Image (cartoon, rainbow, N blue to C red; front, side, top):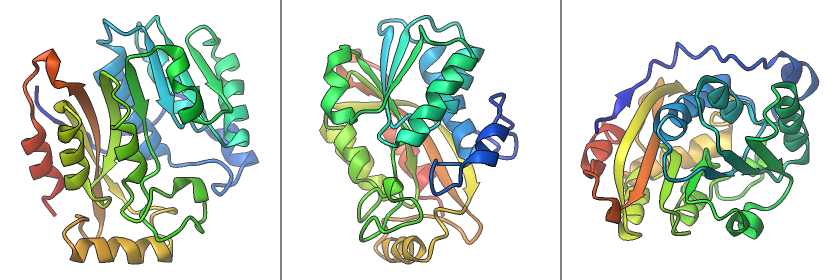
Length: 257
């Protein structure tokens, strides 16, 4: 399979954000329509439209629920997604939207720590847009978006759980090469990916984050231009499935800047 480039300008979501934007600040609930819609596109193309062996999916960090809801509305996926979200406000928004779109049989979001409950679902596929802001600590606009000193700590932790398949977003400014190498060392291969060019936004433009990203760039652990960075939706599968590995191609794309 080959990677796909997505034009980030074409990201109008079908899930209404107006209720959210008028009642919650971006410091309470993660809000980036472009990124959320890209995550939804990745789910639709690489998970829900071709999920044959695993009718149960687990999600780390459901946020306001809009990416999964948008994908479920556009596919014929009949299984169940079990989402975990520590932010109680975001969880309430997600549960409200699930009721609004009558998806209660297919999407269950719990206000619970993912690492305490993920094994209970017996799901073989893990999906996530994990926190990837690099910073020395989590004293940020939104602390839950802290991804560790290089932005990839939680991503590597998810890739160490041993799930058969993992769909995760990976930022080019959050040590992508070592993250991919870690996945390969855990027995995964990359079988598909999608790429979106995004502008630095509210969260990634915070001074502490920008300074850390610049430090990572000097160490060849962050890649970006003055205007954009690349965000990848990556499908990892255990090597036993026999798919062609395209990890080298992904590294080439992610380190292009």
